[in-house]
Amino acid sequence: MSLAAANRAKTTGDAMAVTDGRMTLTWAALDPIMNRATNALLGEDFGAGAPRAAVFAHNSTEMALAYLALLHAGVSGVPANFHLTAEELAYILKDSGARLLFVGPETAEAGLAAAKAVGIERVIGWRCTGIAGVQPWDDWLAAASDVEPPTHMRPLPYMHYTSGTTGRPKGTETPPNMFPREDDIAGLFAVLAQQVAAGAQGPGILVGPNYHTGPLGSMRQLGGGRPLVVMPKFDAEQILVNIERYGVATSVMVPTHFQRLLALPPEVRRRYDVSSLKLVSHTGAACPIDVKRAMIAWWGPVLLEAYGATEAGSTNMISSEEWLRKPGSVGKAMPPFEMVVIGENGERLGANQIGQLYFRDPTGRGIVYHNDPEKTAAAHIEPGVFTLGEIGYVDDEGYVFITDRSSDMIVSGGVNIYPAEIEQVLIAHPGVEDVAVVGVPSADMGEEVKALVVVKPGRAVTSDELFAFVREKLAGYKRPRSIDLVETVGRNAMGKVNKRELRRPFWPSDRTIG
Image (cartoon, rainbow, N blue to C red):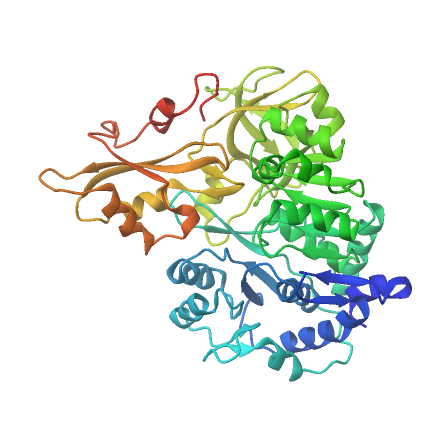
């Protein structure tokens, strides 16, 4: 019996394991699928090094099954943002060393092009019947044995891709505080079962796209025996429908989800029973204070804010009760991390003094970027002491408040967007002399991308022309929402741009500018 099914089969084998509204599987039905998928993965040729397979697909039951099979087989999953272009995906496939690619019907074409570009011969897709070059998921499963697979394989964490200082995404493994480092698969699933048993009881709901670190945790919870409701796409009212229908207990959301839920008419919000909710973690971006207060008033004190990063995991957490007492805080540092605040001259600062926020990892690991020792070193001031690029302070009770952001990262709807990548595309336009990309306010997404472009003398370039230029080269979420033609971006003699000053005119005067 597959380990995920075994975590539930003794008492609830006929209960729902996973559903996306189109395809529903019980735990009993999940078992032979996991056996076949695991055996199929064990039969793949991943070459030398860590076995890795990328998942480039929209949320669905099959997507969840692919991730769950990777856990069972000891294969490192590479979550790929389904908005990526073929060129962007090809970079991630090559850098990660993935030798197998899973796609859905929406991503098959771009996935095939990327796989071909880097020499990946195996592309497996669900609901892709008739697409040349994609092996149907059902055929891939049918060709494998449904006998119980071995469990001696070493569990491997996911390889995530986050933005980097060069504008290219950088790989980073799920950190140890988020992914149990057990000796074998059996040990991993035993720990996952213990975590689920110790947490809020009831199904989880996958609301955000599963290429994000937070939502991806629901795959491990599914492995531990927690039923999962998968939302194929965000729909505010349908979330409420599903919470009531399935008695959902847990989820991971971002502030944009809260804003869209609160935008529903009051009569719609009152229509659904959300009393089953026990724990809703939120992450990805700062949550406006009025939004969080409104959500707590509606759903009760079930919100748990997690602050951190893909490469570090959650470094801080704060409960609803704590937050109501300390509004705006991201909470205290979580073990094993310890807070360190550094001043402009490298001095260690005390309580309520604003400086660069660093985290000490007593294990000495800190954060690690795949294939990039220079970026890894740049994030640390000493072994195990790293920054996530933000400014703030720690109050006299140990609660952390973020006041600024020293990095140029744009956080839009919980998604990290690095301006350098967009700037590299725009500067390639023959009529562009200089460009700077900044984040500006968005009522819906928190921030959105704005490009400030200097046109070469004598050239007639319009914003519409630049919008069309980037459309073919960048995923939709990275494209500027506005492009301003300006005389200068204020580059100094050293060639640097003060992004803080460029952002200033676009932000309200009462908002701390990052």
